[in-house]
Image (cartoon, rainbow, N blue to C red; front, side):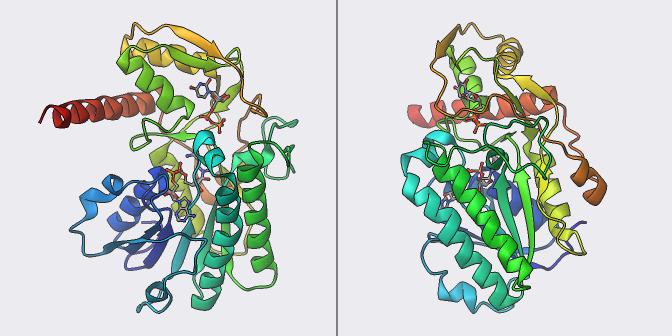
Length: 331
Ligand code: NAD
Ligand code: UDP
């Protein structure tokens, strides 16, 4: 047990891909959990299995708005606040860029202020995107990054950089006890089929026999972490005692090209899909791999799920989803 039982925990963004897995993991440790989510990109169905769980509640609200009074005055009060609220897929966060930026800035400030009021420990889900298109490889936490502040990804990248700044300022002035995770590309069950990220796109295309879309020549790299490994890292970081060590990279250092990922999925699904190329999106990072030595040293954390096993689980989940959708369309 990493977080201790009977804690009262707020998970902003709890109806999303990562947030719903975090809620499950916290509940399985005996915690009481409230998910706060606007359902912008999250889904009730990610939490449907918790509908009868007495230690769980979902509150629908936008973190840009004042935090609902019933959460501020809840007894017992929250011991921990996780801030995962923010669309994470490029097409989704770029669809409402101003809202994305405000979610990271105003939303994070609202949640930090709540943490200060309650004396709760605060966790920020930051991102490898704060390194932008990195000139240093692999990326260590000490790297300041190479972000285009005016491009189409800036609403997300600069928003998260500002969220980190606010979080460090609350720490420096001893207003909140904080933890910051810089999350690298993560995949697994409950990603949305229309998410637009490469893992969900490639798997859904392979399963349906549609052409696989590779942006650019497919030689750009990413390092993909399976969701359960990442959630374990979140909880270890939140449970870490001692002075705030600065941000901690969480991700799987196994780096591969997008083309290699697509080829593996095609082989694993025995798909007949072809491959087509599309233009590389503006400011798309050329390469990305975490240096996780800080997480290994401080948290004794390393990802343990192989890419093959993680992809198997994710392919199975998307395949089951397709069957469920097919069955409900027939009734
Ligand atoms: P997701 O889109 O599935 O989840 C985000 C959740 O936040 C959704 O449930 C959404 O409805 C909610 N949300 C968005 N804006 C909100 C607002 N203003 N108020 C309240 N709720 C809001 O994405 P995810 O992949 O689960 O990512 C979760 C967090 O992790 C995000 O903060 C993201 O930036 C970060 N992250 C994820 C990855 C990844 O690979 N999945 C990588 C780096 C960082
Ligand atoms: N990508 C791709 N085909 C797709 C979706 C994405 O080739 O259908 C590429 C994208 O351009 C990027 C990489 O895959 O180089 C990872 O994209 P994703 O959106 O998953 O994550 P991010 O760019 O935020 O790391």
